[in-house]
Image (cartoon, rainbow, N blue to C red; front, side, top):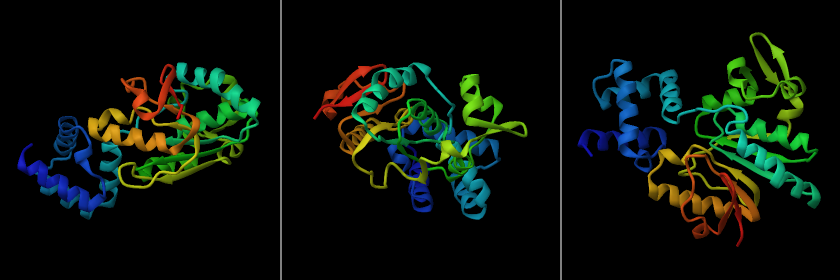
Length: 256
């Protein structure tokens, strides 16, 4: 690693609380260099000064780094399996599930889960967290452009959304069971006794050591027989190491 980037990592951690050493270095450095080039910045020191002086650019940069790619019903197969394999069990048990959408971005995943749970006539509570306050602001507003809703079936769109201007707003009944909160997965404490944790398409940006630590923390945050949902590019090679068993595509169950 070059000394200039190592110095930037330390300054950035002090400035934002985000530890870039936990991310894959080549991938992250390439993204940062691309952003600097786009904004005419010639050094990492110039970037740090900009983040200190311009709050809007700071939020823009943090949002860029945390890669807020999200959509409703993303990877439909995963939600189909949740709907057929898990929700009927919860309903039979009379459970009021506690669900955590970690790295929720703009909230599409959390609202998708709320739709499934309401369709199954289950009471629930969903915690939705992300490090990017800008993404969380959109999630709390519940307002989305049409192109952000491409995965939503028409009958679901009619029941849970209201047309507003050029986009749609989620109905208040869908928002009621969701709490949106800022959280740094690398630093902040995890809750406990969740029935399901979804952390999808977040791990791929972290080093293997960080992935392993987070998986251990997520497993501890589940109740026994709780479910962990990963991204399609984040399949675990040894889920038993964390007390988990793969039961379907991207779906793991805590067994001990």
